[in-house]
Image (cartoon, rainbow, N blue to C red; front, side, top):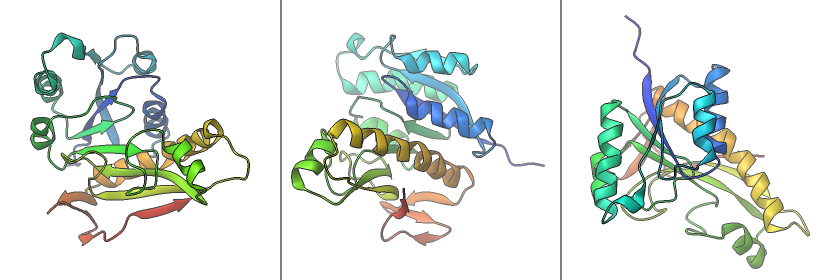
Length: 216
C-alpha cells in the first residue's frame, strides 16, 4: 500500500508568489504534497486567483469579522481541520498567530522570513541589511513557535549583496531564492525527513545545530 501524500494548507494575504512556486513544484513533480486548501484573510488577495486557476480549493476568513486574534485563528483552524491538513504553510500571511493556533498545530507550521535569521526579525529587512552594510542577505524557512520569527531554523537561501543595489532590487532576488528553498523544505517534511521536537528542527534523525544553507 502506497504512503498517503501529506496535505497542506497554504495561508496567504497578498499576491501569492510563494504559493505559485509550490504549485509549480508540484506540477513538475518536484514536491510530493497535496495542497488541500488555500486560505486568505483578504478576499481581494491575488493569490486566490492563482489557486483557482490551479483548481485548488480556497477559503476566505476576514480577520476584521472577529473580536481578537484567537477567535480569528479558531475560525481558520476550523476550516483547516475540515480539510484534514498535515502541514500549515505561511506564504505571505500577514497575521501574527495566537499561542492557541501555534499549540494546536505544534510542529506543523512553516514560515519563510526575508532575512538570515536570527538576524533581522520583523519588517523592512532589505533596507536594514543595506543600512548595516552587510555582505550577505537572504531568506530563512523555519518552524513557527509562539515567539515571532524565532522558531527552529531549517533552511536558508543566501545571496551576496551587490554594490549600489536598492532595497527593491534586493527584495526581488531574495524572493527568487525563497521560491526555491521553501518548496525544498516542504518536500523534506512531506518525505518524513524533517520534524520539530524539543523546540528544535531534526533532519534524518539528527538535530540541526544550524540551518542548511543554499547559495544563489
